[in-house]
Amino acid sequence: MVNGRKISAIEATLPSILELSKSNLLASLEALDQPKYRAEQVWRAIYKEGRTSFGQMTNLSKDLRGILAQNYSIGNAATVISKKSADNSTDKILFKLPDGELIETVLMRYEPDGHRRGRKTVCVSTQAGCALGCTFCATGQQGFRRNLTAGEITEQVLTMERLALAEDKEEIQAGTRSRGELQGVTNVVFMGMGEPLANYENMMESIWVLNDPKGIGIGARHITVSTVGLVPGIEKLAKENIQINLAVSLHAPDNETRSETMPVNKRYPIEELIEACKYFVTKTNRRIFIEYVLLKDQNDTSMHANKLGRILKDLLCHVNLIPVNPTDDGPYHRTTYKEAQRFQSDLKTFNVPSTVRMEKGIDIDAGCGQLRDRALALTE
Ligand code: SF4
Image (tube, rainbow, N blue to C red; front, side, top):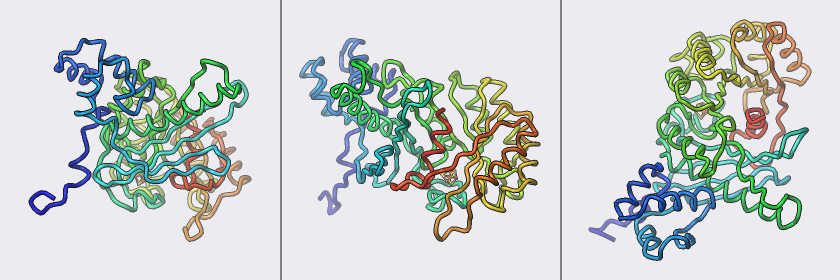
């Protein structure tokens, strides 16, 4: 107790070294009279080798290890709950941050298919809570708490990377993976709690760290940012010098329908959003993923499909049609596969490519309970 006040966990926590960009890490070590290559060593130990303590960095001098340990932690998120799905394909971790905020991160494993290697995709949160209030989203109903820092975003991937690397090593030992083939996390999707473009600077800072080939090294084309359509953020992202993917949750083909479930549409109506998407394509030459959750009789009729076809026909995009997994007490019913196929063939008449994703319910309630297949659609 200090002055009758209990010292909280926040005050007891050291600053996380994950908050430092590479240049800031370099500057911090230079200030400690360390040569430049030390920063590379520390960076590699954290992001490539997945070290969880400075004591494990035995290529550093004992003194430096001690100084680092006195001044920094390697992340401050505590695992509160860790769940694995019955089929072992999905892990979800609930993290507690130093100020008590709770966030979720999901790791999804996909078996090799066709010519493709197996993948491990991490879905990260970018905010605690969310201000955008989409009516179908549990996070949106909680309201906004705060933006996550760049280090807090990166730490989610780093934790899952350690898990993925440990699995790779076990497989190598068991002879089911070739020696030396450490794959770790292959894809990252920004579609957990929060709107990534509403926390733009921290999201980008984290993306640069994740993308660094001397660290975790997630290729830009294996990173997807999913937005409900913040137009200025899309325009800004288009100008970044990095080839990441953009996914836009559209979910309705006209302003009236969209505004009913997504209040953001009143600020950035569909016409403006589609213009921003076209700008993104022009600047990046990247195809955009359009997410469209099918709600029976709400947005899944032929009329809706034709409207959607008309607004998307000039956009380089691929539409993921996702029949909603209805919850017991929710107002929405599921569009059948046959109805989804009819919607798809309507879209085809406008030359708009699409895929129907029938989502399997999974037993650990990842994201909105329907995250897994959506993430798969964004990492194929
Ligand atoms: S769907 Fe995304 S943007 Fe909408 S309320 Fe939920 S977290 Fe926020």
